[in-house]
Length: 388
Ligand code: ATP
Ligand code: MG
View (cartoon, rainbow, N blue to C red):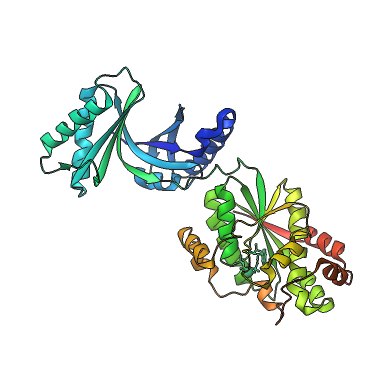
């Protein structure tokens, strides 16, 4: 008998009237991943999703691992489905127990749940009986109810389910359930992590990267595309807009006080990203800024950057230390790519002593020397979109 996957989801369950909306988004996202891996049937019942894998080149465990990346999922269990009678449950548990024992587990417990409360005997009694069944065939396998190495879960519903393998998901909300946002994605460590956190709370992302060829190399661009690919796992693909930023950057460099370069550049980026977001029907911008990390991320600088746009700007990393950001980057496998040594535009056009407390009045005065509107118009008309 093949395993089925049982998907458990958490926070969505609390959504009351809106629950179907979140559930169907979750199911769409699960289907998107599964389609690439196997032939399957997906069944939804009472706050549970079951997946019957019909044909696949991958093992159930490999598929479960991939599915567990879908946001909104708390865990993916590899279950055996049987009829709800004690004989059949016992027989299947014997198989599972032998398997677990052969995998090296030495102590176990059994946890029974009945959603059908008319089922007799009751949960406690079922656990006891099944414990005896296991001990009969595997006398060395001992019971430990406090800290078992493995727990056999038995769920008795219309049908019954047995499982002991459970792959933890990442929680969060289904991507797309919160609408769409545009991530300002650079080649650094922070912005991919910021994207991951926005995805986790249900935003679907498009990316926007400002490329200053030849000051930033083709490799720098490839690096950002690679990062977008890593994020695409969670995003059901990824659209990355690559804006030709060279002329804009050169003009700012030529005409504005150098201490203000980064901040003005950042403001122009935000304005262009905002226009691209509007075209894509996105409702938020996301950056990898963290308070106090560099000169352009003091509260004054963030404020001046923020004033460039009307759209809400989300900064998921605002209160995080670099070391914690790096931990997430490692977990989502962006770190190694992010630390490749290709310059991003800001490291080339950077001043020796950037302003750390810019004032908006002064910045607006400097911006009068350049034609911001033309720059934004140029940016919005000069980008290519890479679809992953
Ligand atoms: P990151 O590691 O994400 O590059 P950082 O700590 O290097 O961040 P900055 O370079 O000051 O910080 O950039 C702050 C934020 O501005 C980035 O997180 C990103 O969201 C955005 N950003 C910076 N440069 C670019 C770029 N070339 N294209 C798109 N977004 C950018
Ligand atoms: Mg950077």
